[in-house]
Length: 152
Image 1 (tube, rainbow, N blue to C red):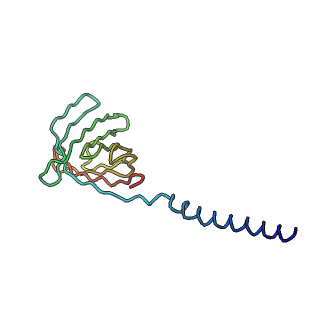
Image 2: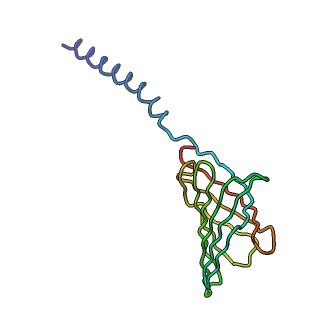
Image 3: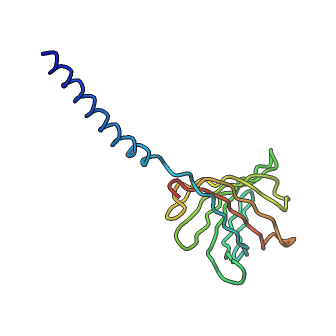
């Protein structure tokens, strides 16, 4: 009886060890890969602007060099109490749409804000958007979007 108990215990240990060796690589391969950081730079040129008393909207063409790369729209509100703007940004380009928000002083020539998501290649995007006005009218803007997506 004792021999059978020892063999049974040894067999159970061997099965457990084999199962453990099989499951460890599976668990290791199931780990998410670190997200890669992507950068998308373009020049936004305003094509149409609509101003109301406390809000405005723009429709812009986006260029990488001299090539049209996409479109963006902005819509924002001005708060006279805080003297700040809050703007929603949507960037449409090959492969998807990216969403961001920016806030700040309306007279500033630079802006920054968080990337809040997207669809297509921009699904679950997180990061930052920054822009710098290239002319006094604010109709030509250098934009840099740095983002990661889950599973990228």
